Amino acid sequence: MEQAKKVYATLRTVLEQRDFPAQYDDEELVAYFKGTGEDMPMEFFFRVNAKSGIVTVFSKLPFSFPEERRTEGALGTLMLNDTFPFGCFDYNVFDGGVRFRGALCFRDSVLSESALDWLVGCAIAVVEEFNDKLLALSTGILDLDAFAKHINPKTPF
Image (cartoon, rainbow, N blue to C red; front, side, top):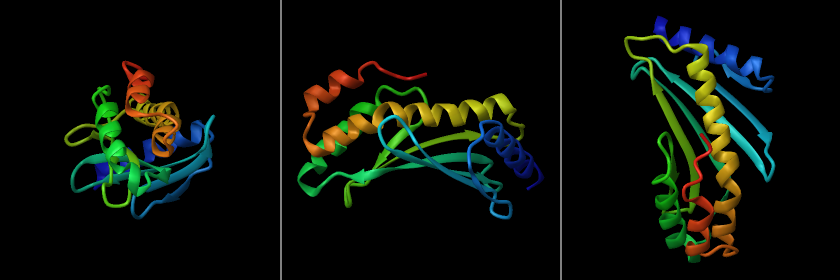
C-alpha cells in the first residue's frame, strides 16, 4: 500500500503541475478531472490500485453509437486500436459506449513524474485526436472507409 500511495502522490503532483482542476479521493487513490478539448468535453478518471500494482486511466467519450451503427462502432474501434502502441478504446456492444483505457504497472518499482506525466499526456492526446472521428463514425458522417483514412497511421505519440 505504501508504494501505491507514493505513486498516487506523484500522480497528484503531475496533475497539479498541469493546472488541471482535479478532484481527489485520497482514501481510494483516485483522481478525476474534466475539461474541454478542441472538439468536445473530455473527462479522465485515474485509479491507483495497490492490490494489482497498476495505475489506470479511463476516459468515457460523451456519446454512444446508436443501435443501427453498433457494427460500425465495433469495427471502427478495432481498426483504431490496431494503430496504438499503448492504450486502447473499449467498446460496449450493448449500449454503444466508448472509453479510452491505459495503464502502467508499478509492481516492485516506482513510477517517476515523467512516466506519469507521459500517461496523462498520452491519454489526453489520444482522446483529443480520435473522439471527433469516432463521433463522426457514430453519426454516419464518416463511413468505415473514410474513418480508416482518418486514422491510419495517425498515432499522436
